Image (cartoon, rainbow, N blue to C red):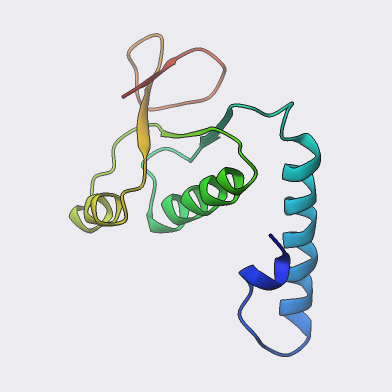
Length: 115
């Protein structure tokens, strides 16, 4: 997998920056795959389409390196169009429930990922 396979063609500037970041991420996944297996991808609470798409993209990249992942979120995916995005794209998300039962914050290491 290479950064060139990920990026759309274009000229200079931002594409060069994006390509550099993509190479760094792919290098990290390649070099560290044994030490980050499995990988928990945690979105912010009440994830929006950007958070869901970014988590799903990282999930797909990690899968290319044989890294097992879990995408998790706190709160709810409340908007109908966001739930449709998850359903139609088959984004494998799991809900995080805090150890205290309070879903308003996913900060800290305490909690559980639910299927």
